[in-house]
Image (cartoon, rainbow, N blue to C red):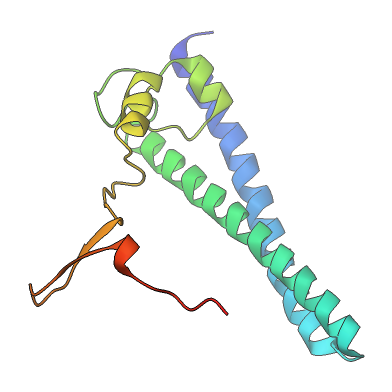
Length: 148
């Protein structure tokens, strides 16, 4: 199968997954609202409801993130940029796109970004913090925390 045909097939797969995620997220959010409206019971019931809400919320967050990646991939398809590495401009191998349909970088560029510690374009050293007034350079080891 030619690359163009593979990408068209991938588009249909992404659209089906996008629609399934939208449906799931709509259901998850309405279920949470319904559960909150019905909440009555003792402290144990409230704790269990809270734990269930947290799990549903985290699942919805993961699904929402995937949905965002899929929508970005579909946008890249419309713009003719799908399957091209954002870093080097080379074709992303179809095997990688089949494994991760919303990949935006080839494996070599992804490995290089991970090696350099880049995640989402943020490159911070949180071990050292500088006071904005310029008076002090503070190491994380200099900070005392009361965890009791």
